[in-house]
Length: 145
Image (cartoon, rainbow, N blue to C red; front, side, top):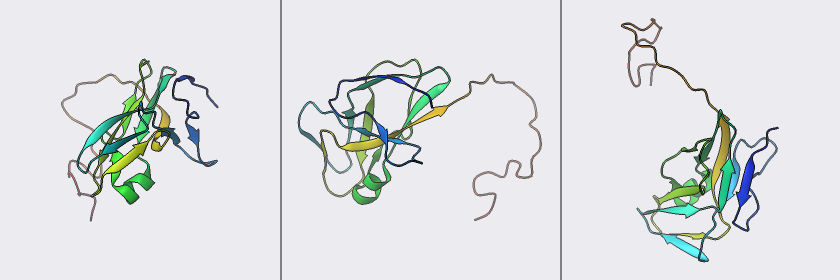
């Protein structure tokens, strides 16, 4: 298991896995006031009070919580958000309310999931033709309904 350096200015517990096989860790809101209201159709940057230092070759992906999406229509606007290995600023989550009612975020609420993932950097190789595949250039929906 890898470790990641973190500064926690939130007073909340660190992000944690909720089950033994969870891929994502729940992250919590750290608000300067007790609560924030996101009206239907509106979005807001929710601070977490966390700063992290990822190892080169890793990113942190910020993803929606399925329960918030299903029950309240609230999701992460730029899902998945990416935190690069060289970023050292505050981790924030952009939430959008697609629901019909105002959504209240309270300090300490679980607002999103963070997944730590490896990535690989590439170099482009310009060519005149691509190798053939069974699918080819059929486009969206070309593998069936």
